[in-house]
Amino acid sequence: MSYREPREVAEVVAQASERKAVTPVSKLVILGVLAGVYIAFGGMLSIVVSTGAERVMGFGPSRFLAGSVFSLGLIMVILGGAELFTGNNLMVIGYLSRRISLRAMLFNWVVVYAANFLGSLLIVVLVYGAGLLSLGGGRVAVVAAGIAGDKIGLGFTVAVVRGIGANWLVCAAVWLAAGGKSNLDRILGIYFPVMAFVALGLEHSVGNMFLVPIGIIAAHSPGVAGASELTWGGFLFNNLLPVTIGNIIGGAGLVGAAYWYVYRYPRPVKRDG
Image 1 (cartoon, one colour):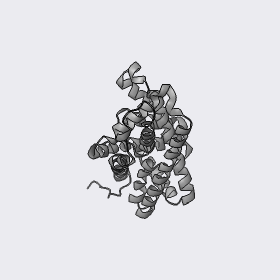
Image 2: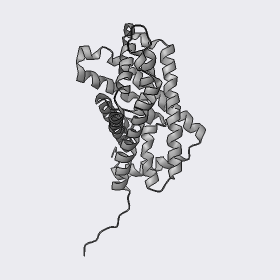
Image 3: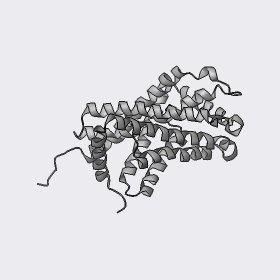
Image 4: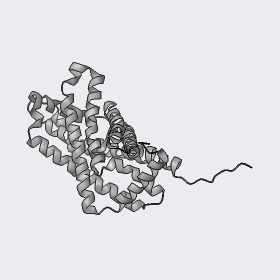
């Protein structure tokens, strides 16, 4: 077979959790930075290809296009072996299976989260320095600022709920990729859930580590309105914090813990008679 059964995937994820828990910090930081970079590249590509797309294609198809290209980021993370905070929420399977400690799991999450943020900001600097916000006669800057404004303005509760939905799909993508035995299997397993969460307008913390900062910078470009409404404080407390909470609930709880209970939780075998 070219795929693994779900029970096998649960074991693969548990083993991966053990490896991640003992990865040296220096390597964890490098791999976390790379994951932030990859997700940011997918985010920037999504901004560029969606600029003007709705006017030509309509709302739904333009969202489908944006989600399709955004999947590049997670494909690069999984195939390239980088460390992504949201995907690492599945380490809860290793913890619940008593393969790793709670401290080791949380330490991994904190280090990888910070490294993802650093990688995302590196691409913000690269995009700004390369003048990519001026593409399309400055329309890319307008789109970037609009995306950031929409995310900051969601409200805390809505941001949490959208974060739950996003990482439910992202961790499902990681789970499906773990079930594949070829790169094509893994790419297909990643593509559809990631495309779906972007097209649906759900919220991914690491994606937002790029999309909102670049939007804040874009809002100060000539001809772009709303700069005063986009602040770093608004980003951190009105978007990143609630989205991160939602991502943990969706990824660790609704995917990781659920699959652990079904496929790894020890239960007595019932016998007839």
